[in-house]
Length: 402
Ligand code: SF4
Image 1 (cartoon, protein in one colour):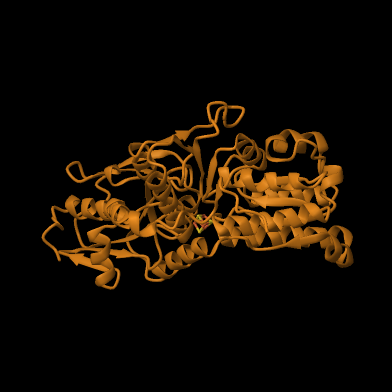
Image 2 (tube, rainbow, N blue to C red; image 1 turned 180 degrees about the vertical axis):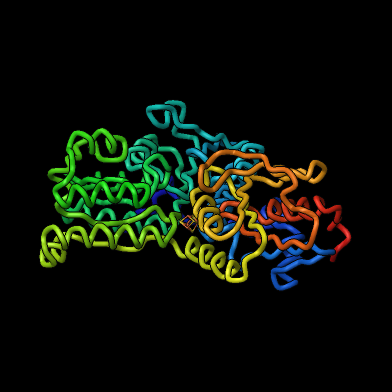
C-alpha cells in the first residue's frame, strides 16, 4: 500500500472544532439570525426587509474558508500563501491576511511562484487553479491545501471527458474568471484537447452562425482569441461540441445556450449528426441554483426594491442582481458601507451596465419593502450590517431588537 501523500491535503486537517469559535465570531451575525427567526421578514415602522430563503455563504465557500483557518492553526510558524482570493469577498480575504496568510496576485503572465519554497504551505482557492499552476506547486514539494469545491471538480470531470472523446469544451462563463481558467485548463490532460468560452447568448450566436456555415474565420479568431485554446480553429473545432458552464452563471442562460447550439447543429447537419457530435450537461452548482430559485420565489410578490450584497467581481452575485433587475429596481452593493444612512444615498453597481452609480433618496419616505439576497461569498455579519444601515436610513436602530 502506498503511504499517504504528506504534502497534499484535500479534506482539511480534522481541526474543525479548533477553529469553529473563531469562524463563528468572524462571520455569523445577529441581524440575520433575527430575520431567520422571524420567517425571513422584518418590519419596523413602515419599512419591511424580506430575505430570500437561500442566500450568502454556500457549502463550497464555508468549506474553503474553514480549511484556510485550519491551515493557519495547523502551521502557526510556516509561511502560508493563498493562490489569488479564497473567494470573492474583500472582508474574508482581508481577515485571512490579518491572520498572516499571504495572498498571491496574478500578473499578466499568471502567478509567480518563484518565492514559494518547499517548507511553505500553499492554499488553493474554492475556484481551483489551472493544471499548470497545480503541477508547478506540486513540483515545489511544498504543502498544498486544496479547497477546490466539489461542484467545480464535477465540471472538470465533464470537461475532461469532452477532451478525452475529441469534443471541444464550450464553456458558458467568463474566460478571465479563476474558475473558468482552471476548468478550461482541464482539456490539457489530453493531447489536442480544446476549449472555447462564451460569455452569453450573444457570443453563443457567433458559434451557431459558424456551425451554420456563415462564420468568418479571421473575425471569429480575432474575437475569441483570448477565450479559446491557443490552437483553436473554428473550421476544425466546432465540429464536435460539449457544453459545460462556470458553476455560478445564470442557470437559465446556460441551459438556453446548450439548447441553442445543439439545435443549430441539428439544423445545419441533421439530428443523427447532432446525436453523435453534441453533448450538453448542466454544471451549475446546486448552491447557485438554490439562490437563484429563492430570488425567483421572493420576486413572486415583488418588493419595491431589491438589495443584492456581494463582491463586484463575484460571478454568482452578478447573476443574482441581473435576475432581480429584470423585475424590480435593484441595487448591487459590495458592502454595507455603500449605504449611507445620514446622506440617504446608496452606491451600487448597475446590474445592466456594470457601472457604479450613486443614487440619492433611494428608500423614499412612505411604506417600503426591500427584498434582500447575498452572493455565495458574503458572510452573515456583513449582510446584517447592510440590513442595519437600511433601517438606519429611516432613522430606525435595530440594536435594541431581539
Ligand atoms: S458557488 Fe457553487 S461551485 Fe462555487 S464554491 Fe459555492 S458551492 Fe462551490
